[in-house]
Length: 234
Image (tube, rainbow, N blue to C red):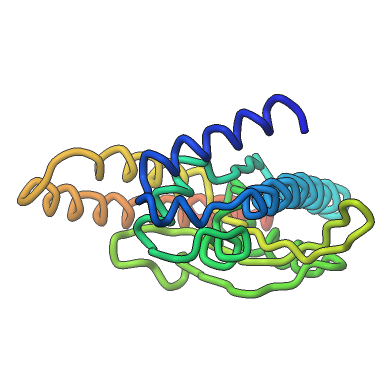
């Protein structure tokens, strides 16, 4: 185990001590700690695997269509602090198996595309790749969430082999346009401020901004279509 992994495990222990009761901590046995380390190794591998596959999707589209729909790919492994908070809030068992089952975003890949149609094209191409199995699909683009969030989330399993043992590892893949990503970043910052009436007001403003962003995406999609098909609108 390298220094980064060791530091991560130490941070988890510190986060658990800060967040959980003595009874819960008593269940965090050395065996559970070892299984957690193994789970994190599998998660790191599945993130790298998905990153590679997504870039392959982009390069394949570039060769076929002359444009790459994948603008950026970023992966995130849930931090020890957030894991401890989730365990405390969710009240589920403090084991590696329980963490994997109850935290679908334990390992998450975020994909940025230029246009909404690219989001669906990349998702479809990824799911057609060998070994990737879809567990759940949440479409908040065609069926928008009430607070305005827009994006496509795929919960998948990907085969990973470590120490000669093949395992189907779960991971979350979130696909959004650059405009959707901008809204998400702003929403996260604004939600952390204000309460009561102000919070309600901020929520309404965010929903209005989400509508504008949706219109922006649609108009840019139309512009691309017009250029590709040489459509003259005026």
